[in-house]
Length: 214
Image (cartoon, rainbow, N blue to C red):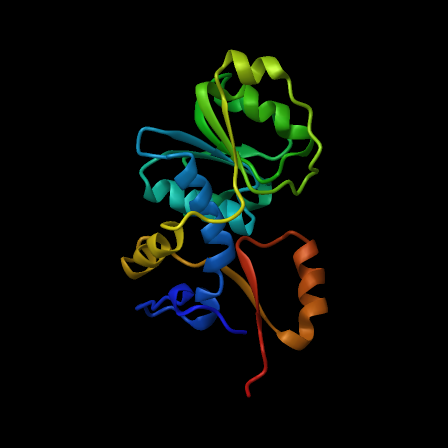
């Protein structure tokens, strides 16, 4: 693989290579959504799918910005998501408006979508921001246009990262402001076993595949 030198970043920290490997995809995606949604200390942020790689990174990064965070996760992962800094837990399958209240949050970070999408707009305040870079529960959703236009909601789609995102992540790592969430390490020749383990959805954070030594 050959890349431009401008795309190579020095990182000065004590993290292992495996820990550093958890950062680029999940944390970059999470930071990009928070960056575009202009999340700050005054915001209340709801994170859907908070135990996944992007979701767990989003909890940490939103807390780093000083925001109050509510996280949607399964009952078995509540303690781990609290440990990341979540202020409020919404158990998966429950109605967020019943737990948090209608029109209660400033920003929704949602890479889940699917059937729960309408609830994400109900829980947003007037002038709220909804941001997404994925749809693991299904890409086709029901949108009540009244929730969008009567509440002046901004919908923010995110794919490629804005230029400051990755350099910012490097400063967070070097400053000890975030920590890696390395769920498990597999050798590359056990990729099928890693995929089977991944599909059990019992982990928090990222799996890393390690190539054989040269």
